[in-house]
Length: 88
Image 1 (tube, one colour):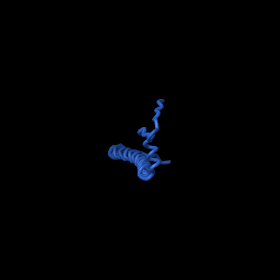
Image 2 (image 1 turned 90 degrees about the vertical axis):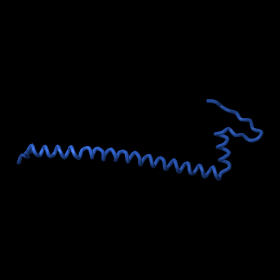
Image 3 (image 1 turned 120 degrees about the vertical axis):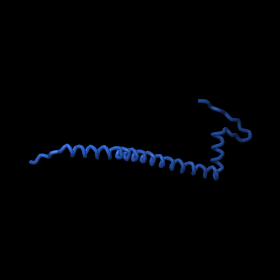
Image 4 (image 1 turned 135 degrees about the vertical axis):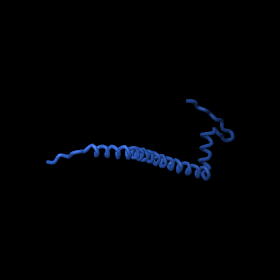
């Protein structure tokens, strides 16, 4: 079986190549991770945007939903009703 011999020049060349390309490779990996994070953030925001769009449409078209939201969030009452606040 033949022995593999490394000359010092080969080791120096390998070290130089490693030193040149390693920072770029590390940056590449960091950018891939950031890209994955941003893609998941985009997906989350798209879902939230769709939810808000549906709620906007509902608020524009559904009078019963408008009344429900007004009663729950602003404490609006009809004429003759007495509001009761329950504190937790």
